[in-house]
Length: 423
Ligand SMILES: Cc1cc2nc3c(=O)[nH]c(=O)nc-3n(C[C@H](O)[C@H](O)[C@H](O)COP(=O)(O)OP(=O)(O)OC[C@H]3O[C@@H](n4cnc5c(N)ncnc54)[C@H](O)[C@@H]3O)c2cc1C
Image (cartoon, rainbow, N blue to C red; front, top):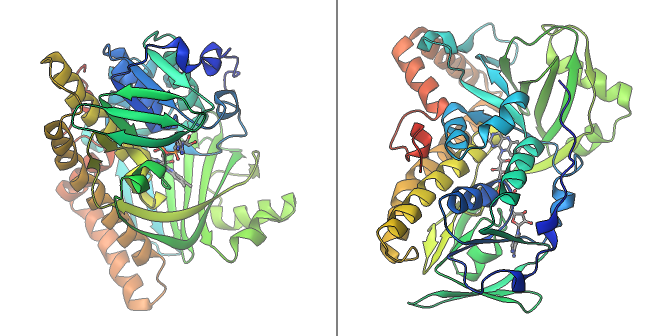
């Protein structure tokens, strides 16, 4: 199915600071998926919100901005639903009915089937990031209390016991109760707050592209573990799939530079024949892969959300899902505090946010890092152990159901939005 055209007019892109009250309750640095989701959630609940990003919003909405698709867990879909965004996304979201995880050339594999959980609920959805971004920006436009200040950049934040002053690079200033840093993995605000982070680069690049195929995918997501890393085939609308091909960092540039026919041949060699004839149809994108875990998610009147707080390997397609749970938790704490007439930037709110969110993100960082190391290992005993592990999980229905619920984001101490309740 074709995507809707990006026909937004962007009157708010040009809005200047002087057009909004000089006092926002919440200022968000970063208008990526995390920052905009937090902005729409909080502004939708009545908060006065300012969002600042150095990039031009019109450029962020073009198809050339981000080639990624995201595996959106079912719990994340509930968050989009609760904020009123899902109707704008649903038509371009492909339900994931099954997940097949296979080790390179091994006959044993792990198979998740949504039908094993009873009912029609899919395990999640595959959605193009630009579809998510467009839905967020359209919603933002309809909220008069959400002010997008872009292009502009947060230069510094000065927090005091009574409030916080956000200084913009162009000399503008903005007073707020709380600042959320959704400014990505290099987070200037995290650095400025002297929050240290554990981080490393994987010697891998994520090559992302789209393919068209002769046979329908049937809503099946496939992950092949190859020696260089996972090769994921993710079902998109129509007879298309998104490829996330993890490749050795030294080899990736050569693959990315291959002429079309040779690139297609490399893809087919990794694909297997289950979808029939396969043809690359989109541009090729390259994302260096990294792990990052901030030591703290909060400082005085500052909360880190999304990639600013944690970056994980895309092996399980969970990075944005963790960010969505951050947003759901922080929005709930802020909105509840405000309903009580209390300061949303109070330390108690921030401490609760950190306690609530950090364990989930640390666990997923450890699991994804471990899986990547385990499956990128060609030593025979390690291969045997992991194949037996996959087969064992496959044969233990209770363990498998637990892992399926975990992948769906439908267990654990979930915020109201992630349980399908309104904010
Ligand atoms: C190959 C790949 C595949 C992935 N697949 C999945 C998947 O299937 N499922 C999933 O859940 N996750 C996936 N992820 C992870 C997911 O894409 C990221 O976690 C997510 O996009 C992070 O969004 P963000 O808004 O937190 O950060 P970003 O997108 O980095 O946004 C940060 C924003 O902050 C702005 N900014 C920077 N400095 C400043 C400043 N000083 N002031 C104001 N603004 C500033 C930037 O301009 C930018 O717009 C994948 C990641 C990769 C690399």
